[in-house]
Amino acid sequence: MAPTASGHGATGYGARITGVGRYVPERVMTNAELERMVDTNDEWIVERTGIHERRIAGPDETSSTLGTRAGLAAIESALIDPATIDLVIAATCTPDGMFPAVATRIQHAVGAGRAGAFDVNAACNGFMSALSTAVQFVAAGTSQRALVVGTETMSRIVDWTDRGTCVLFGDGAGAVIVERSVEGEPGHINALLLRSDGSQADLLWASGPCTPGAPSPSSALGLAREEARIVMDGRSVFRHAVNALVETSMEAVTNAGLTVDDIALCVPHQANRRIITAMADRVGLPMERVYVNVDRYGNTSSATIPIALAEAEADGRLKPGDRVLFAAFGGGLSWSAMVVEWAGIRASRAGLPTGILAARA
Ligand code: ACO
Image 1 (cartoon, rainbow, N blue to C red):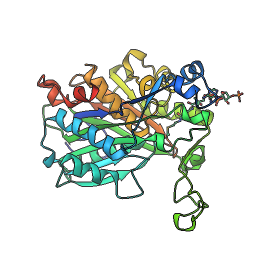
Image 2: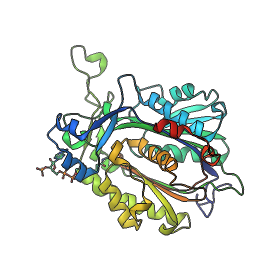
Image 3: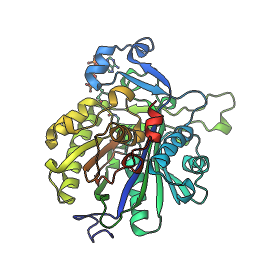
Image 4: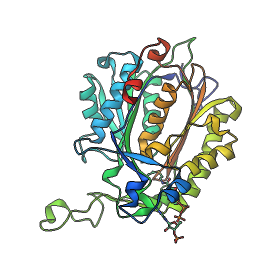
């Protein structure tokens, strides 16, 4: 079904999610380990963020290898042949290199031989931006079947001497398969909103090799090259995050022709438990209907929503026809919300063990 003129409506966009997968690195970094690295303690981290531990990519792992594992799990759960995927979009702010796109490496590694592929960088709002793009391709009929991956190796850009940021982030990847909706079956994107405010860009940013003033590799003979690192005004980001998430979530729910009572599960960006509970409280969602796993993974930036979604599905928290609210916030500043009518994952519906479960083992 085509979107309404205003881009949303009772049924919404003619695209649905038919597969989900996730992968996180094996290495666990606990708060106790961080206590030995910077002047912090478990009590402060848990009280201010809700984070107990996070995963750290191994020396041979990159955003493309993590994303490939998550992508394969999503493909397996959708019971599809990867050769039928015609679009791969990877959301990442920690690519393997400046180019090529992480998405092309994933496209090759998962066996999506005929797919176009590109990356989207919208920091922690990246997955929602990538998913919104895939939804437009699929709803317009330009793409039949898309793989959307959120994948990050945040540990590579964290300043491990800055206690204000290093306790927050972790590595991981999640992925979904997007296909056209089918008449008479559940599964639509009911509403989607993307917003940004570049005037607040300096509140949360990471430098890199192209940052003005940074020594270039060619002029850096004898000089250390500028390393990418995260810089953040945590308190301001917190305030903006809660306001933006509340406002956009309410607007998306209204645009979908629903009320908050219709939302079976909210899967928000996992940056900080306090941000999530403040948002849920103001939106009027009881925490039983909000999925939280920030305690185990920290903030994996564009990977948080698809990782949480895959876990929610594996935990039996989603059933076909459920209305699910996604809401994200990140550097830019940029933020978003989406209301999804859950189609159900083919492997789960068929009672099969899925890649999601395999990846959880
Ligand atoms: N351990 C112990 N003490 C700490 C630590 C730490 N890890 N970090 C900061 N402190 C200290 C500060 O120095 C300060 O001490 P002072 O009072 O003596 O000056 C005190 O704790 C309070 O610091 P605040 O920054 O005011 O603490 P706050 O309650 O705001 O919590 C936090 C900080 C957790 C960073 C919070 O502001 C937050 O979560 N902000 C949002 C961050 C976020 O979500 N960023 C990601 C966005 S997504 C993306 O695009 C990447």
